[in-house]
Length: 130
Image (cartoon, rainbow, N blue to C red; front, side, top):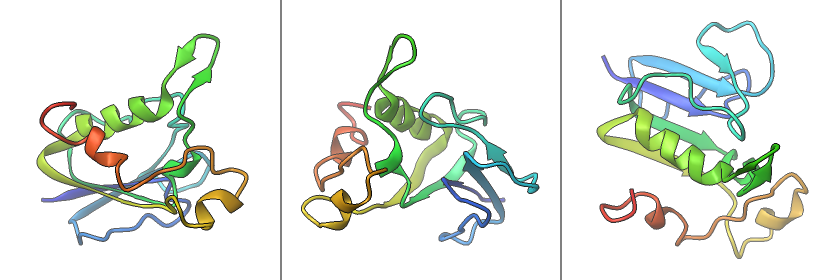
């Protein structure tokens, strides 16, 4: 049984890998028991380690700040990347779809607080830095 987790899913989690089981995380309340209500800027992913074959994030990670003070310093984006790595099975796949530099869409929305480039993810998902 393959499992996928869609981050920032809203009311309709996506399943781009056609996994057998579909879960979601969103900040907004809802009635779907497969969607956990979590603020990933300050909370961990509420699933055990190596639980998912796939994790996806559609138009989500650009809304997660790089750093906040709440009341101490927290590197939200790094913590989120660590959490994604933690819940993915070894050899699992993370797919993120986000407006990226230098595209205008990365800067237009005032809720985009984390500008991503093509060089952002290799720093988090390699054998040296993970």
